[in-house]
Image (cartoon, rainbow, N blue to C red; front, side, top):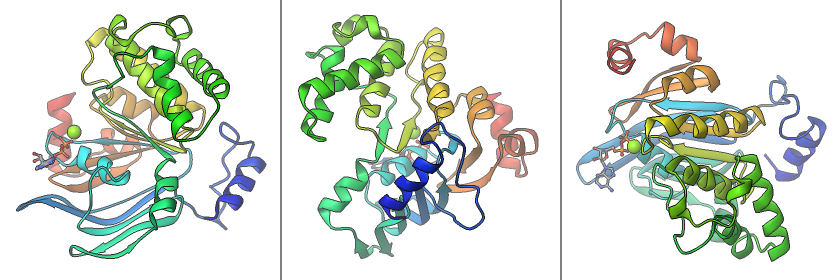
Length: 280
Ligand code: ADP
Ligand code: MG
């Protein structure tokens, strides 16, 4: 999908938060698409033909046991891991194409960099700069990478920190914040780059239980605002309530996917049934 066409469609649809435009039968597009991704670490096959398509404004939750390859999969999407096989598309644009360890195609570096900026990521550990204030943490990347002026970056940061409920913390240092607050800063920091898709890798797993809700609430609002999201989570309530599609990963494969109702009420495989029993 060409960017200009996408932007035109976004305008017609009222932009993020506007009515959906992608249900039209004449056009199909995906924000992120992978075909047959394979990845090994030495002898260990961690991803085995993972194919997934995420449409604009869709929220996809990935669930599955530890070691299933969920983090590795997310990391391949924004090039924190290389792949051995398969195709990765962002915005319907082919970034990578590998066949049995051989690179068939890769987007030139500059274009690749631009496409990857469209994908924001939030990790389990927030990794804020400890010697910078909350506001500075959110301003840095837009100034250095997106080349925003300091004023623009500050306005954007204040706006986003307000959105995640931290307007009163902008001058604080990260170590003065709770884990939940730090994770909300990390979300604001990722959003400050204006990504089209956000990846979350167990964003609440490192938090004390009483702080999980405030982070999930911010993520839910983001979903309601129309952000395209892929969320690896053990929060089954969130997956049920917020995702349009839930994906079950097991042993390096997507073994089942469907609506939350399909996955949680009508799990097909014994493995998914067992997993749900163990976690719910
Ligand atoms: P999940 O996020 O579902 O728990 P991961 O993607 O983190 O699973 O890991 C999948 C498998 O890959 C695990 O067996 C893990 O030990 C292995 N693994 C992950 N990263 C590396 C790495 N950098 N080197 C070697 N093995 C790894
Ligand atoms: Mg993981």
